Image (tube, helix red, strand yellow):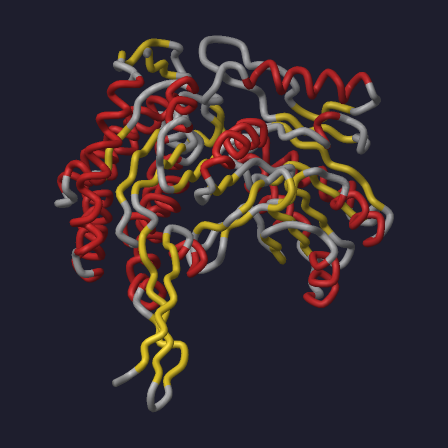
Length: 455
């Protein structure tokens, strides 16, 4: 399997893919090693995870270079991702004892009722390329803290990073057979679905998530899917500093080239603020530098996947054919690399593909709305349900709007944000289950009830 640098289109590595036999051998090793890990005190498991976090920080420079070379994000954004992963690990390790330890729910003179959180066993983590550290940490850290063993399948577009993660776990003192990496394309992921894992945790597209869920259902084991989004954002007419809001929301739409499940993908602006907002948004966008992701000050690097260029081309063409106006960008950049011009479309309508289908790239449609009711109707018009944002000076107004939008996360005066303390969950085509928070820690456990009668 060749690893291609998306900025140069050059081959940077050749890896050997796993096959059915090597996957079986890895599963057997994980299964054999897991009971001893489960038996270790939680404090010891926490210590190993903390050491892993320390190694992420110590190796951040090298890890950032590897990540940038294979996914194309600017070095500064790669470093930000690793810092973010370290922050999440800090919360998870600080709260692991609180949420994974036994709980006495009721006690009388002759009876104690207790919950024990047992690990699932051996879990499969089929992960994503856009934020391999962040989406990986969401799964394999709480899984290991809970006492599970992990087969980690990084995306084929982030395989080198996956191997670096495995190396650091070994260096942190985790037994080698508790975290193993499966290398390969979708066929390797499909083979994993045929194996007897005790849980499946996937991050990726709705189409693949639906396939995985259907395939795994017969096993009757936990299956969580963190899928895509078409995340809406509304700018109300009581916003005071429209330039500041435009800058913040532009970043929410275009950070990491828009390659995030919670990137802002649809913007609705009250008609009284629309013209000022669009002007400020485009001015902010044009101030950001496009170039080689290794260059200082670059905001836009290449897309990770060459195939996404065709998706964006089709969305822009469809929008223009239906009456949209290209304010800036609109096509693949000239030259080598998978670059697509940062694109802003106005005069968009709800029937355009760019307002319905996940873009996962630097393309945004901005629509004028009459009032809050119009904004709510447009925000709700989606099969996805990951996040929704409202910018307003009035919290009650924003909360009333967000309450009517069926999404797993609501933002007031912010967007494109994840906190380890809060559950990360989707609805409808954005998936099901939760990572992070106490919900995410316990997602990798099976609660066992103990009824203990005292002699």
